[in-house]
Amino acid sequence: MRQARHIAVVGGGVIGLSVAWWLADAGYPVTLVDPEPARGASWLAGGMLAPVTESWPGEEDALELGSASLDRWPAFAAKLAEAADDPGLRREGTLALAVDSADVGTLDLLADHLRDLGRDVTRLTPRELRALEPGLSPSVRSGLHVPGDLAVDNRALLDSLYSACVRTGVDFVTQQARTIDGGAVHLADESTVECAAVVLSAGAWSGRLHPALSVVRPVKGEILRLKARPGTLPAPTRTIRAHVESRPVYLVPRAGGLVLGATQHDVGFDEEVTVGGVRDLLRDAERVLPGIAEYALTETAAGLRAGSPDNLPIIGWVAPGVLAATGHHRNGLLLAPVTAEAVLALLREEDVPARVRAADPSRFGVGVAR
Image (cartoon, one colour):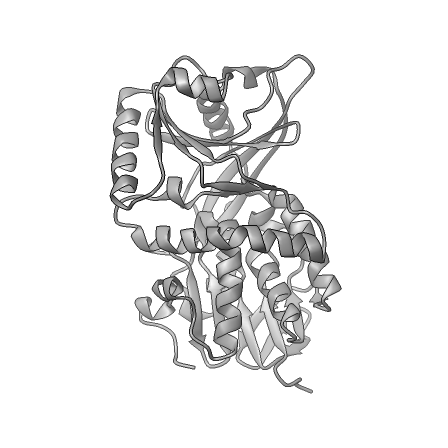
């Protein structure tokens, strides 16, 4: 029998868990459907909350949406720590670095773009950069300090969100969703979760569950975890985003080590780690922080981000009773607070925050009024 206002959330990554917790905390009965919640691409993320250094000319809507969510992150993290556990929010900021002359040109374009938008960015010389992070290579030519960026321990965050969901009464169904409609989630074991509405937050697999989301595609990213060994230089205190011969690499500090990423490949649902991907990440990261050559390589993995044609997420009604919260690409962790808030507003038939409107599915010619 269908429960009044019972919501089913399909997908248990950072977006699905955040939405489920937010809705349950607001009084909704919630069932979350995922065969392995708190894993997937979110488990393999770097943890950067960095809309400014992710920004690029032509993607102003993404910057505005990311900045709106970043503003919500301290309160979101504090509420989550009170409800469950500390998600490990870091406030040291980001250094955006350039290694060769072409990379300096890319950094110049980013700096000019951000200044035009009135963003707080400081240009630093190589000496000033090494005063902040002594382990940086002498080959680093230039950099930007972005003090407003944050970072979070993605695995601590997922564990905390899962605990918060359990404590607020979210029911977990560890089955694979097969098909969905506005009144039910049909599962691989032939059972059904009946509901008043479905929130589809299945990441890269969203397009397989509803035809309106066929624009969502998997974008493969490989990621490495390194652990400091006795006698090695300590990891940097700030997130490092660098361009090395035009290739992006990021290095995010963790307790006792680093997370390295991120390759990007449009290769479908391929989750195998490649030799070339590991080689490229280690080579480029060592150009930025030579000391990591003495670190231990403790994990290699590949995950599938949910890409959209314009790098904005898809947040809104795509069919009667079916609400999408997917397509977050590299910014699932960053956009979790604003997405959860928007989903709650949509279910209540309230206006969403102004900057979320750019993520409405109607821009792709799909969606329905509610």
